[in-house]
Amino acid sequence: MAAGLFNPVTGKRLTKAWEADKVFPYLFQFYAEAEESLGQKFFYPQPIYQPFVSIAEQNDWMARSESRELKKFVERIFTESVYGDQTYDDFGGILINHTGYLNTNLFMQGLRLVLEKENAYQPHYFDISLLKIRNDKVNYKNYEGTNIIFCEGLGSLKNPLFGWVPIIPLKGETLSISIKEKPKAIFNRGVYLVPSGREREEEYLAGATYQPNDHTEGISTTAKAELEEKISALIKIPFKTNFQNWGIRPSTRDRRPVLGAHPLYKNVIAFNGLGTKGVSLAPYFSDLLADWLCHEAEIPSEINIARFKALYS
Ligand SMILES: Cc1cc2nc3c(=O)[nH]c(=O)nc-3n(C[C@H](O)[C@H](O)[C@H](O)COP(=O)(O)OP(=O)(O)OC[C@H]3O[C@@H](n4cnc5c(N)ncnc54)[C@H](O)[C@@H]3O)c2cc1C
Picture 1 (cartoon, rainbow, N blue to C red):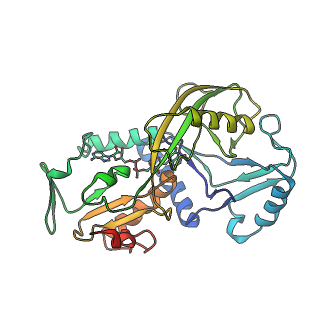
Picture 2: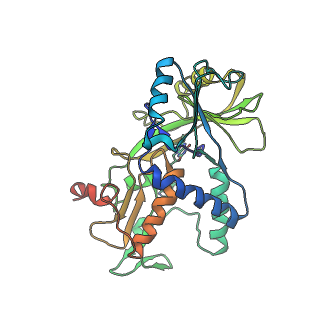
Picture 3: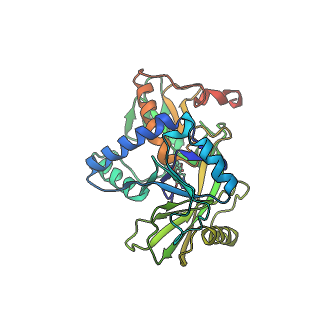
């Protein structure tokens, strides 16, 4: 259900995302290669435009955009309105690069087809009680492997092997809306709009909410109202809400992924904690995990599952 946005300049104060210098160049190469090998288009690099709401914010950005940290991610700063026919940008705005979106559904469908052809995909519930762990092998039903990697998001909380890892559910909701006119950039201010990738060209996904204290399943009228209000404050183009969706992100308190082996079983591995940024973090960190499995890399302590080992009993 993720809109698939990737953006190296995030947060309320718009700061450079953690490890952006490594993660973003990697994802550009990864998804471009994935498109080529899967023979499908699902990766859309495109600048994100964030309108300023005040002169103070404009000034702040004029100063900050020159910093070495941010310079390469700032395409351009506008001190006057550029997309004023479509968005509220009287004070100009910032055009951020190394950004865009991934059509996550198409990407995952493409991958699944490849795995199915290789007889490496089973769309079934994984019943952990059937897993047999030995020193150098793992067995599940009639499968045998050297290692098992759990990429199970929130499922980890119910996994007797990894239930101690503090994955924090972070609910989010999105709206699917129809817009009469195609936005000239990805507009983003409290809410973003990206093409939904469905047949209808004028359909956009708007999202997403952050509902850390909401543990209910399903959509809510509060989230719909919040998103519609934010969309109205972002774009001048009339829109119509068609559909609402929800999901839960597997996040962590320190907002870092969780990679590494179970404290007792070196061949039972977790890959989790991608939180709000699966699209940008997954390629780089799955490559790191693969290198680690081949003894070609270490897992840095800040993302290593070992940082939680005091919670294991
Ligand atoms: C509303 C919303 C909007 C988002 N927008 C973006 C965005 O724009 N950009 C971005 O980068 N990220 C976005 N995200 C976050 C992104 O979806 C996550 O980072 C990503 O899905 C994490 O991937 P994952 O594979 O680790 O976990 P998940 O996507 O949670 O996948 C885990 C999977 O494991 C399966 N599973 C668990 N246990 C079992 C079992 N026992 N047997 C079989 N299957 C099992 C689950 O069913 C699930 O399919 C958004 C999330 C939400 C909720």
